[in-house]
Image 1 (tube, rainbow, N blue to C red):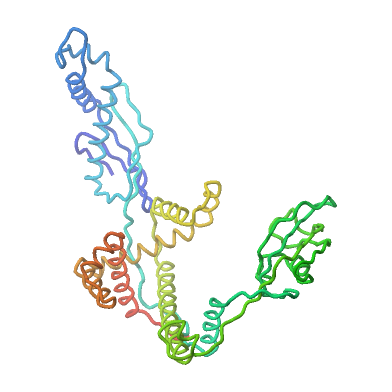
Image 2 (spheres, rainbow, N blue to C red; image 1 turned 90 degrees about the vertical axis):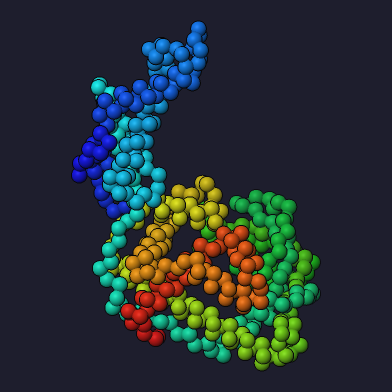
Length: 419
């Protein structure tokens, strides 16, 4: 497509998904006019020997400051051309465009290629008629007991014992290891919970032969699946001195312990609360699973481009959140790219449907949600709003309301079967 707005020629050379490449040609006359304006501007700013500021002959200024004038004219022309392209092509930019292959012709004509990323135009071919399975939300007695046992484990006390350690015991041990028949170095102190994967099994077995204060030296073979390939299958001389053994003592499962855990009169009351929490969690997980399956089906049935810069930005955000070392960034980006792209597709589906169906939340909706949050907390709505605003979470709440509405709309048009 070609146009001649503002004395420039625009030719779209690539329109692929979210990417646009546009060849721009500016006539020499337009560039010359820009140079004249730049020369006048520079002349008003510089001081030439023998002349007051702004009074030096134009030819003298143009000769001495040719590079400055050229650069200022170039920036002005490219800025005007860029604005003309955006207006003419009606581009919805999502990232700062970049100019490439900038060239001047003999007659001062300027050409360059503008690389842009634009908001993808998503047209859904299918968002209804899908069938997904909702996971079971049944909470069994065993699940409740397991959760209560985890709570007891978190409140367990470690009690010293004067006997050989067993799996589950915490030990303090001095370990020394020598490669290839070398002399054993001075030992280093380690604190290890046996059976928790903190020590290779063969060393754990050696430790469990000791009583506190005892020492043993023995050859130990490193496992074939050891993370460091160079160490796999090696036999090393190991000296172990057991310094201390502590055994976990779980609190009694009685009403007194239940009262320590919160506002519960008895173990039965605690069990009831745990069951309720597990049931609420199961419902949330099932809801999330259904939403994920629906989005997978919609994304699979509707192919659309995603902006590369959005994917890259998301990868960078996760890398920062996970504190990925700089040396591992490239590997992380490669491995995480597919996940980031799916997240971008998910967000685009929800945003597009929200806009298309008029489901996007507004300020009034956010105010109502904050009012509900404040009532649950017994807090002042204004204070809650101020806290959320300070934490930068207002947009998150707005997005959450929109997503809830979009999924409600989708659930009404698709089939959810119970597992």
